[in-house]
Image (tube, rainbow, N blue to C red; front, side, top):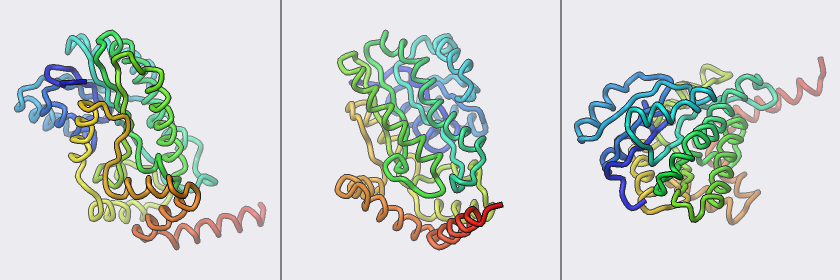
Length: 289
């Protein structure tokens, strides 16, 4: 897309973190914004900021894992905004626990939102983007869509899949006038830990402290998203660690993952505790009932 001026952008997970920052960045670039989220806490502040920029908004309270609600969303957006040109599939959650003990419902919850929401949203809006002949789909993956991390099997599975989905879709859409971008943020200070499902309540406080002290502001991602749309970039890495981990994986696909994970767990102070949990679990399973 050569311009976002007076285009209409739809952003899921719009009321916090990367979603909110992306809404503001899109408005700064000239777009009108349809904000989609299940939890509308904080939406008034975002709307006020967008209106101060001189752009219009519409708000849609939708659970992205609800296929029927997502299928109906384009009509609601077009009724409010008159058109749609950009879709940012950002809504995401995580559940931290060993795959061997994680409840199936928690695994499915992550997959249905992180991957299912991306697929359903793209399927619903893509016909409208194609009709505009000047559209763009942005899918937010993660650095955990580059490296596989223990305790994050569900999240990594969903984010690796978002990457594959976007790259495959890009090839199908080549020459149609609709571009695609997959975004791999590293450590970004968002609310994902606050809303995560965790097996150990103590882990939430430790992870929140780490994110507050060692991550960058979500506004950086919002700016990168806008730049990717306007420059038609297919892939974006955000934060230094995303670049480092990506390079490690390219140079050393297996060992690189191990080195990246070791560095990450050491930085978070979780290497020993995860090893102890794994060893205890394996011992229990081997001991039998």
